[in-house]
Length: 346
Ligand code: SAH
Ligand code: SF4
Image 1 (cartoon, helix red, strand yellow):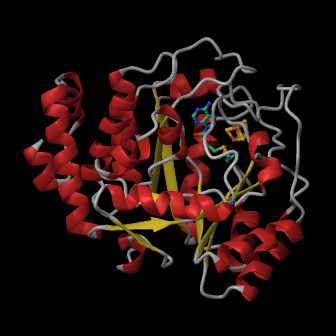
Image 2: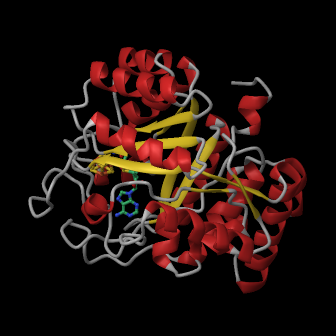
């Protein structure tokens, strides 16, 4: 672990040795090293992003996800471009300078509509960064959205195990997912990859593969959260990923990719009341408070028991500020670009 701290690299064998020897003592060491690395790279700052979940309509059918198209029990919604712009205005007034627009794979939002939406937001709020998290599209659509002003794109790789990926994604392909991530990087986006921890059938070898893949891809951001079951999916009876294992992966990612932006995810806050605080002390340096209208929050049900369903956007903003301060860190409301993108390496 000391060598990992110093060199930001380990081979597969070495990663597996670390993963197999995690116990309460070594875990604490690992988290402390990751926290020290984060302080060295990003100081005590935590970047806030306003998350707008603008449609829960999805044509895909990922086995773990409550938004999957086969889930007929979910009431579907789609915010209009005007409603999304209103969320941005409220967010802007609360101080947010990054908006994350996330949705299922909803084809009503064509390239044209998305281009109009993104360019409208960038025109009204020129000092903000716009992040898209809308799933897989073709090169041309990604390029047009980038030209319209989208700065960043979150597309988790979900798992770097081709066996597991195939088992969990009946309507998508492992190769195409990786190809889309490569396309986003080529076009010039700041790219966020990421994965779930504790997926049914996931082994330490699979998790080592996730870390090795991330090291090769070298994304600007990495979203990591526990798998959490949703009652209306085929994985409803599987146990959730553990907080401990997820914290291990966040800490290892901080050490392997020191310059990455790492969110303390909502799934972490759902897994444990202080899950996000613990992530922030194990290498994470971003949080994404919810800016979606209250009426739609319960409908964006990726998994069961999702937190923050009843809190106004302003409450989320200040609740998180308190939580961040409680672990000795401080909110930074700036755009919060990754160190990689600032160094011009993108
Ligand atoms: N449709 C887009 C964005 C929305 S889903 C996409 O798939 O890229 C956003 C993320 O939620 C997914 O990448 C997945 O990692 C996570 N997610 C979905 N279902 C989940 C579950 N049951 N437990 C934990 N995370 C989940
Ligand atoms: Fe759709 Fe994304 Fe859920 Fe898959 S993870 S079903 S693509 S919303």
